Image 1 (spheres, rainbow, N blue to C red):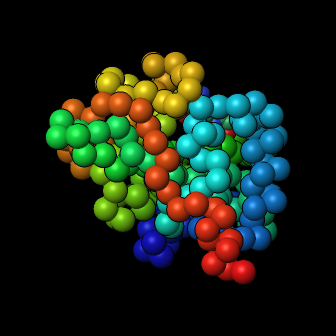
Image 2: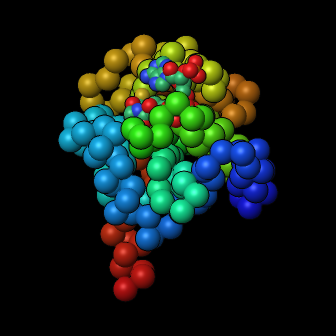
Image 3: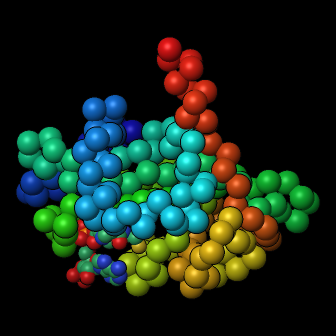
Length: 195
Ligand SMILES: CC(C)(COP(=O)(O)OP(=O)(O)OC[C@H]1O[C@@H](n2cnc3c(N)ncnc32)[C@H](O)[C@@H]1OP(=O)(O)O)[C@@H](O)C(=O)NCCC(=O)NCCS
């Protein structure tokens, strides 16, 4: 991770932001940012059903910070099972979202930097595919397309042309069919362990 973030920092050395791993002190700022960028409706999304009560995938909660260290962007990825393969075995994958950038900082490449860092980190951790529900004209530039999710469904209403995936390993989603199911670490379990 250090290598990935180091290279992202170096690449954007001329910009006033850096990509970093989210820490416990970022939670309030991240939630404020999400309220501002996405509004209350964010809690009604079908993706939320796959996130509620879960922790993000290990090492895959990232933030963008301005020069003073304030959170100005966020992206998190979540462990899911993307249906089952032809043999009936669950297909492990990641669900990406929400991705959001502070409205005051849009259009500076922060969303793109968060996406590239998240994809690189997910690949380096050995994940096979990333799925998301979002605007295809934005996410296609990172390699996300609807074709890979043709036989998969979200656990609630979704628009099929916005249900996209990127394979990190060739053919990972080949034959994957069925409903996405949350498979990440449960939030309560972690809190109990910490107590
Ligand atoms: C979408 C979002 C994350 C982009 O962040 P950003 O830091 O402004 O993105 P970048 O600077 O990396 O990229 C900007 C480019 O993406 C394009 N873009 C932004 N949102 C887009 C969208 N919904 N569809 C198509 N293109 C989009 C911009 O027009 C710009 O294009 P250009 O490079 O040709 O000028 C940000 O606008 C945001 O937080 N929006 C509100 C929350 C949201 O919609 N999240 C994504 C859910 S689909």
